[in-house]
Length: 96
Image (tube, rainbow, N blue to C red; front, top):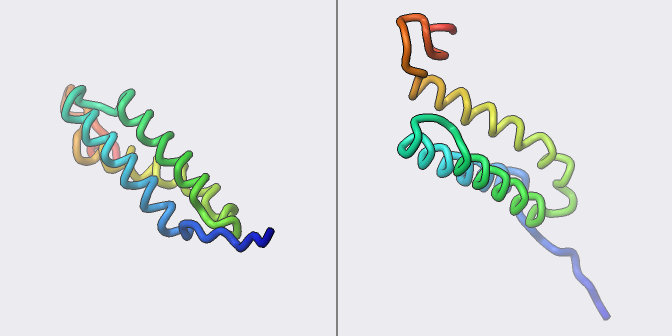
């Protein structure tokens, strides 16, 4: 039996998959609840699992650092785009 090398996603493709899944979940959560919640968590984890299972074996090391970076980008983006309601000093934009 001849087995060839399984070609999968590159690191960039897997990162875009995680970013797309996380951003979709974040958008749904912000519209429904006003903050990141369960939908974001489920879609983000599903995107990470799918990316890890579909990435090319040579790129596994690169995909390890993708989820924390994408999570930070999404959380900071939501913090700037949709700051927490409260006084004048609330929200990430005013703290930065």
